[in-house]
Image (cartoon, rainbow, N blue to C red; front, top):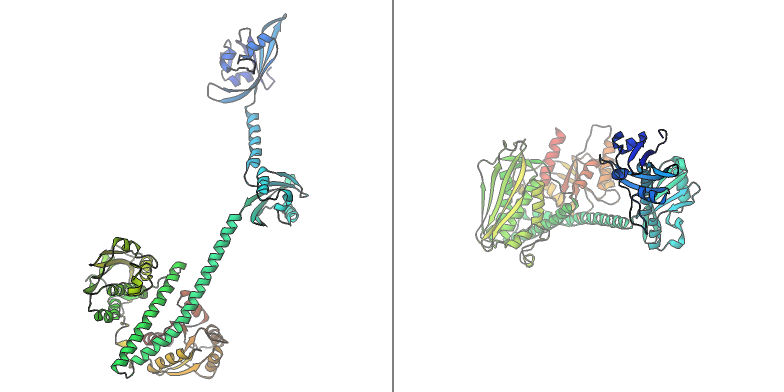
Length: 615
């Protein structure tokens, strides 16, 4: 009794416990204190069948005189431990008279849990919605779950066999998997209108390979759509970059020639016509810039420069550029800069000017009478923000105003107050959206408050850094724009450009700056000219036939290699992106000028480049 693994319990004719072995004592958890207790009262087990009501198995044994077995009985001990037991009630006889029973108790708990775990694991594969297939080392199918058969039925491949669901080189993959003992992940197989990805896992000790399949048809379709969208975006970017170059090349001719004509002897009527042409070309250039800026924003490629900014000079430039239109409409322009606003900062002067110019231009456009007021104040001091300062800008007008609905749509792409706005006032509807993006890039926000018929006020903040260099920045709209006497010196300049209009503009500008000019129409001609003649500087167009400006510059730098000489080269390009500028610098060019070329920017670029070269 003590050596068997089962619990042995002796009970008398009244089903009271008489004795038990140590296994039974441990199982019942009450030691010898249960002697004399009713066995049925402790385990509460019953037998039942279709013909008989539930009854105590001991009573049934007494009535029939036969062995009674309870195959499975769930029992909770006093300490709340759960058991699954098997019980056998054997009649105990003495002199032919039944004097009780021997109850054999077998603890099935661990074995049944293991069995259930095995069954659960088996059901996992069978109940899995995805295909699962098992192969032996010869490539024969040993098992395919219901998910596999379901997929084959859905795809109409039941008659084709399981092998049709796998790539043609299945046997090679199985052999490789077993030989290397390394799994193969996401092997894609295309079937008519579906794509399935198989992952193969070796069970080397068993000589088996288990394959798990996943229907990735929708994923592949999404991936292809994403690739198509990316390709479309690349094509769009390429198109916009090409259009930028192609539009800026003739714009360079128009703006350059009108600027040269403005400085010549003209009658009042001719000067008025030239001014009109120049303003029209400037307006067209603004539209081109808006479209290109919008494409940068869409592509997430809009970035900011960091340079010294003279705040008052910047605002003066904007007001000077817009005062002509304002005076024609009889509008007043006012600037209010708080006394505690510092003179200089570090930020992106071009984008700061663009935001203010756009808002002031809009204010003038939509105002018939009254005035436009620009105000700048310090929102937080340097002590509050040691890394910079936050400026509060506002542009107030007395124009047509906006409704609440119009205000909510105003900073969205292509949004204008109403459908007739573009016909009445012009514009792409991109300006304010671009302003919002630029302000947010500067760590600020932009809002509008407006009353219909009374006017609007646009407020925005910009986060700028304190200036390092306290140099006075000359205004682009000052006398420097027309000063013929402000020359750069008797320089010998080579202009490499295949476009005749660009050649004329560049030559005339350089002659006004006191330079001697020679021409090259291709990259080859430029390289040959430089090998024959010593030039002070080269204006190099990036796109020329036979040899473009990039290749010509690389060839010039190659020939300079190992010598102390370095010829300053300025790139001329119609492309405006930072990537294009970096491409120019990577080719060995020293500076980049974007078309359309202007006399002030050319003069400034030459002076900076020559100053850097001589230093």
